[in-house]
Length: 274
Ligand SMILES: Cc1cc2nc3c(=O)[nH]c(=O)nc-3n(C[C@H](O)[C@H](O)[C@H](O)COP(=O)(O)OP(=O)(O)OC[C@H]3O[C@@H](n4cnc5c(N)ncnc54)[C@H](O)[C@@H]3O)c2cc1C
Ligand code: FES
Image 1: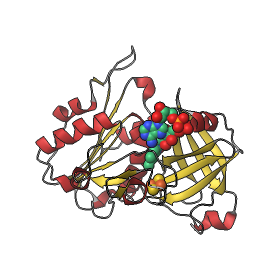
Image 2: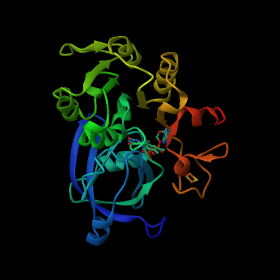
Image 3: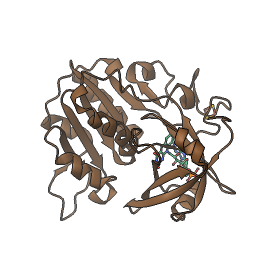
Image 4: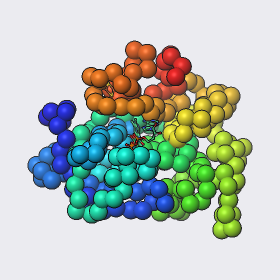
């Protein structure tokens, strides 16, 4: 990024309706030279702005190996996200990116991989799963556990289906409340642990989702014997600048926007409780 405060104009190339309240926007920068140079890593995020409305952070949900466009997946909660959901293909938004640190993709090579995602926590993990599957031989057993409130709350259903067709990926899904068409597991995501074989000695676990889910997942992973530095998660804080200047995202002496959003449990444990 040449100027960390200056949004670049990005054009919406495609919009996917993921659920009744979440959409994936595929974007590319209007400035072709900037677009060509642009790259990001799994786990990093953007500050997306709508002129006259406001700015908000979103994780990349696309595969960083695919150049030319990038995706963000946005759930409606308030002012900025509501305005984003009214946008159409061809409309523009401001983007400051890439921001924050990234998932330890290289460091996880040679390990088994366990992904535990809840609800809107899947999009940033999709940006990790896809490059890992591109280099599938670099990793051992690959297990994805995904939980959502109801079948209609599941994001990236097309990708979930594609991953479930692979023989080299174990994937299990669960919902808190089933509907008539749901024939998979029912219960919170941690209840899936009983149904999969995980060796904590050889596995790196990545988890992302609502804070309460992350808390219970980490508790169970620790009980299973995972070392604290092989449990990786993301923290969400209110953010403004996204670049370590305003202090809005501070937890103790750490700024989530630059020291995170990706932290190991070993690092998280040292932060003051918030
Ligand atoms: C690093 C990072 C990555 C994120 N990635 C995604 C993503 O991939 N997809 C996605 O849909 N959302 C993501 N979020 C959350 C997203 O930034 C907020 O939903 C967004 O800022 C809400 O803006 P708004 O103007 O629509 O809502 P507002 O009108 O500002 O708020 C609406 C409601 O949401 C609550 N809220 C807003 N921001 C946060 C927050 N950061 N933490 C907890 N509660 C909040 C408010 O208290 C309020 O109740 C991420 C947040 C961070 C910090
Ligand atoms: S959002 Fe400003 S310091 Fe992190």
